[in-house]
Length: 162
Image: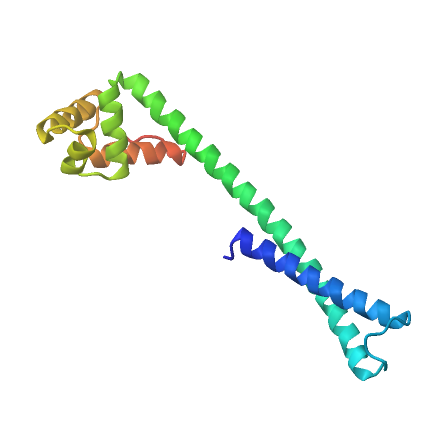
């Protein structure tokens, strides 16, 4: 998908070219001619100019449509992110997780391994293993797969199986 800057630049560049062509043709039609004769080339030039204006209108409409669509997607992502955050916090409160357990749970959800979590949290792997065991015990799930499954089911209104 083209970038906003590129689309905006192409829109205004096309508009500028169309305006230059229009002013030249209006000037020639009113007698302020840069070229002495009005011949077939100018007829083609006028047709091209109207085609260019039409394409600018279409481009402008598409840009507005894309902006509305992008804003809609950004809104949906923000709402989904907020809903997921609310779901996590509700579970964290229900299970009485400590701040460390909350952080480790977030890393679990992201798919980090024990070693990666230890590195990110600047802790020993044994500490992370103890925290994950505490998370599973407090949540009532046997492991990472069941925990993630419960989150996904609740997000998709499937309800938790466990």
